[in-house]
Image (cartoon, rainbow, N blue to C red):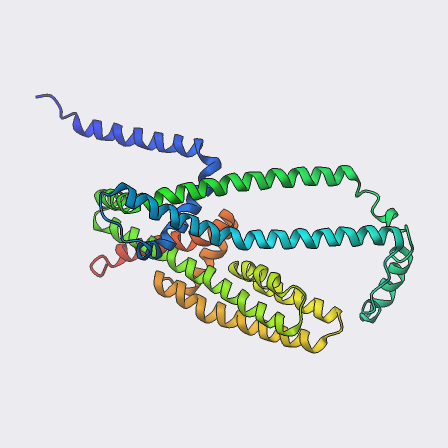
Length: 352
């Protein structure tokens, strides 16, 4: 009786599938970041999208139009703050270059606070007077900063901007299809996971989704809240450009331990301007906001929903950031949440 060829055929199909998947990953390696970003955004915003539109099954147009509108809404939310920030940074850069040109030609007087610095204030004041306060003297210091260097920097910056714009377009395009076909795709993935791993696969997928959403809430929303609270404080204290300071601080607050950099930078500016009381008050207030956000709100959102200990959340954030960059802030806790879910299944399968 001939041997059953089906096991060999299934093995060949698995090997072929793995080989094709590896080949696809190799071909799409330049766009993997855009695809993963789209997946993270889709998972995080899916409950909002479901409320945005209750689509009827099988109606292609009623699936496409809400997906398109919601994708444009997400793009607007992402692009508008970045666009305003880019315009503000460009304006500040132009003013800085203009002041540098004036200082090169006419000299730049030393600020009053420079000589008041302890230990090194007198020496810095003498160096400033000898090199920057004398008209034309700054050219000797900036002799390597020539037109060719500026041109090379502008070209590299332009190429990086074009590359990011292309990736952003592919992210939005992928996001549109994920919104349009998300339920079907999610069902197929859940079915495949259940076929491969049984009921454990479905639970694992649900744990990954919860971890991604909890991380987005804990990082992005809390970080933006920190930026808003800090921007209001800067407005009250009279810090220059409080809106831009708050926006940049909110972006820094998304990264663990990034908010203190903004706090000490603003405090340094206030201290340099002689506003010692405001510098101390802003530092105390900012560190209090960071303490509440990082030690109370953020761990409760991430570890509570993803069922991860705080140490694992911190390791996932820092390890993911080091390995995958900014995207790793969301992938790291999700990976550790999946590992923790498997561990609980292995050590206590009857309770899972």
